[in-house]
Image 1 (tube, helix red, strand yellow):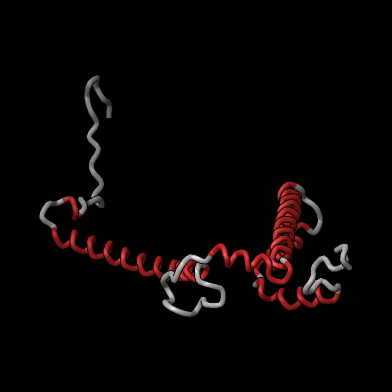
Image 2: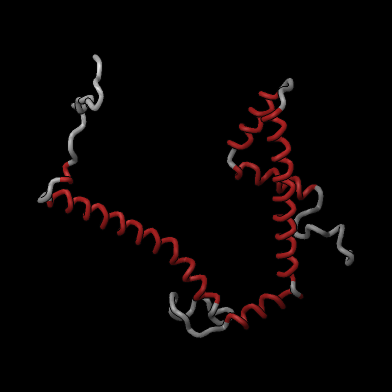
Length: 178
């Protein structure tokens, strides 16, 4: 087949493409089903938001109640604002032990995350870029360890920390008071 100058080629339309049903005006049943599904999705989202945000609201309300009266009075509304007094009591209780607990948590989380990220990046780079004997076994072992639920490590870690005297006071051997 030869084409002359200015002549166009006619390409037949595919037979499996049909116009959409919503393109025709007057189809109210499609609009109603779309509206119904949107209302249903919105209702599910609102119930989910309420389910997840209600405990946060209760936490804010309970933090503003007087010390020792978190469960007294109306449960989901303020009886006054006592947050400053509650924070003062928290920070002075037990000679400021809460601040020490916070420092320990920050140190453990910060140093653990930094060391874990650094070692994981180095191991990942080595496994991705270099071929060496046992590479597949190491990768399989790491994958198997990741697939074990973290709750399975709780008791062995507690026993290990208990054996090296790191229970109840993580810096007992390092603190100047001991």
